[in-house]
Length: 426
Image (cartoon, rainbow, N blue to C red):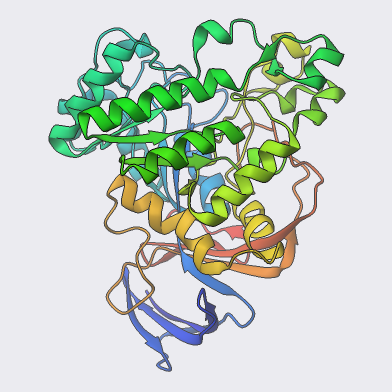
């Protein structure tokens, strides 16, 4: 397929024509060939890469499948996603991660790069077959027990030491389990007024502080999942200043929503880690802008209606995020006037691809690069009235008007989304 994205705006503000032939960009400048697609007013970015998503398959297909999750990802401008290991069976061996990767290839809409479990069955006791998962066809580089914390310090130290042998990464769900038993929401004024069990910030911050020290001890790579508190940012900033190999992600919902929403008792706002205070939101935004937080990870967590359409205490933790992440990034970085499109490309694409080692993703837009691209209309708005392309509908931004809209997504030189609609298998 040969086509040209005509009069498109790059992240640095240049207006150019971008010619694509097959799966590569062939020129960036004035040249045109093939079908001419008018992209005036659109911003062209490297396709987005999500280091933290839940596709639920195998085992929980009532919530999401690799196909439906890939459709939601493509609609959100993503060309690569990393599904977490809390499937059934758990992705703690080469067979399961290869199965997930094959399902992604069959869907053909985004690159599906599985994350392997750190411990067998996510039980936090025995290390999983991380070496064989890395050597498998899936070439797993990131390992996480997300949904659960690797709370045993000795197990965490061993995991960090082990993945160092093949330059892997441990992505930690920072949650001290003893401090969060039966916790329902952020511990603070709102939880006290509502009478709901509180989830203290220190439960996250203490694990992050410990793991940064362990990463320093082992000289290994640590990635902190879904950072949610001001104190966590302070720990990460300190670790980076000491040269520790620590990276961190923030979710779109922690950049926008606060625990005040829990007053509605709507379980769509029940998430792990919980929505925090406005002080935390402001600190997270500042950290994303100044580089303390490296990437945005959606933590896209679909659930069937029966898991959310119930009383708060019985509801599942989690919310959707793939189709709205770029809009929230635009709100925080661009609409605020505090950053720019190059930073948005960095946190949604370039750096997550580097952390994972995906060589064909997050590339500079230049001749010879792979054509994994997202085009946004920054002046349009996105408003979802349902769950979008996901199989589930636990959408926290329902009927909320968000800035920007993904118009086209291109994966390996083929449109997966065109004019805002799914274009079918690439």
